[in-house]
Length: 187
Ligand SMILES: NC(=O)c1ccc[n+]([C@@H]2O[C@H](COP(=O)([O-])OP(=O)(O)OC[C@H]3O[C@@H](n4cnc5c(N)ncnc54)[C@H](OP(=O)(O)O)[C@@H]3O)[C@@H](O)[C@H]2O)c1
Image (cartoon, rainbow, N blue to C red; front, side):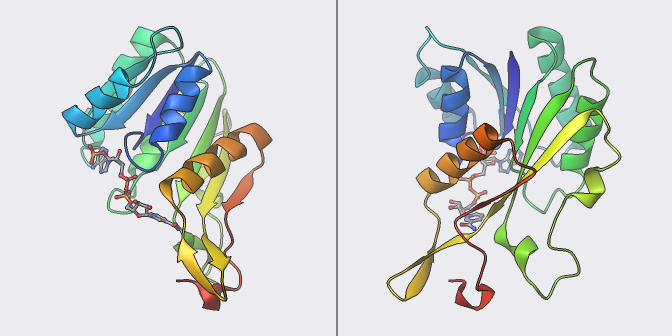
């Protein structure tokens, strides 16, 4: 079983560790060599393994080349967890397009910041752009916020990772970690 976690050394690091614990070969995309190595060292060898894919996803060709290398080494990707900054708007589609060509279908969990839920926006979902990928089961995981003590706060990394793991378990098309309503209460 092969999974890819893009951005898997940051706030969703625990998702990378979780998937390795489930026996996946986990290709983790990030730039920082030390943080990638630290993740490899923190993943017990009796379980699945973490494989660093050190690349900047702003470089579309290098990103795809690295993904192709991972697929040729560890096999078709059945699960993708994708946290990509809006500074690289094409990268989520490039990866989706590559995975869509696979002989095996893939569950694609796209993590999206809370701004997608802003009611003043035209669309409150990122799904539309992924309809064309027929071999992909697209899921969006929207990061919200926590209402507490008459106020609100942003999610912790632990809450974000757990929310993504819950989304993988639930297999829903749309999951919201925390809440996005009422929008006026956003921190
Ligand atoms: N609604 C919410 O609650 C919400 C929503 C979004 C963000 N946040 C918060 O915002 C904070 C900042 O988010 P963040 O995304 O900077 O944190 P992050 O998840 O901690 O780091 C981003 C991840 O993506 C990788 N990455 C970043 N740029 C990359 C690139 N160009 N190419 C390849 N990999 C890249 C990083 O590794 P490298 O740096 O090594 O490349 C890291 O693994 C988080 O701590 C989170 O708590 C909260």
